[in-house]
Image 1 (spheres, helix red, strand yellow):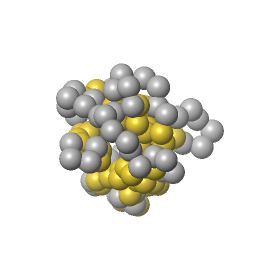
Image 2 (cartoon, rainbow, N blue to C red):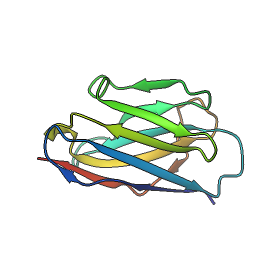
Image 3 (cartoon, one colour):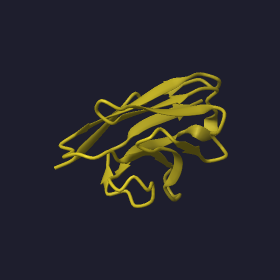
Length: 118
């Protein structure tokens, strides 16, 4: 049973930085695509960054050049370094895993960690 547990969410002032982590357990093998999503109440969940098993990354335009996704290959733990935070970055942030490594269908999700920027 795969579990993803996010941490690192906090309340910060605009311009500040945060680093989110996502610890995976119960993963049987292979190297999944890991991604970060975020959601604001009343809006759809938005994919913001993804990283494949070979380290290829992709970002949505609103976070490109401010956020960096990385991964500890030893345990598939993804990180999201968030710099120059803006109030519009306020959301619940989720990590997700796509076992196929296609970064398309995410079978596993964490419970979320709240980021608030004021």
